Length: 180
Image (cartoon, rainbow, N blue to C red):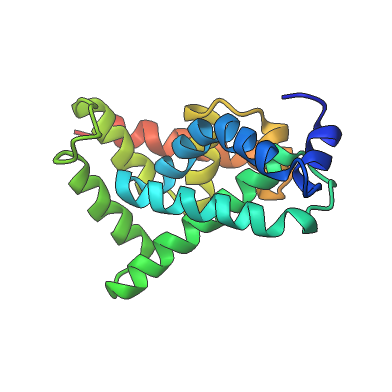
């Protein structure tokens, strides 16, 4: 992406805002979809959350303090929207967010947008069983290949804490994958 300061200025200026926002959507849509999908799991729900994320980004651009990268700020919004979505769905169904995630994984087999094999499905189940923070760290590091520094900005956590969370997540996933 072009010089970030210049791009943010374009996003904030009424004359260049629409064009700049279209570029932001074009540049961020794919990676954000993957990020949200790794949390929400369901394709249709992911699209709903993604749309909400772009609405929130647009509405809150004027509040962006530029203390982090635009990428990190947008990812933080996407992460929070995804977690809020899952918690609301779980609450509506009177189950825990972990039970909700497990239910969504069971539905993945039937979903036309999931083309994974049995091992990928088992991996998704293992990830869903992780505590929320470990799940987020694992998804961002393993699936989206983000650097610890980027994840640190997104989640507002130390790099050392993230490395520990990732290590514990990998260990739990390995144990799950190796169990019968």
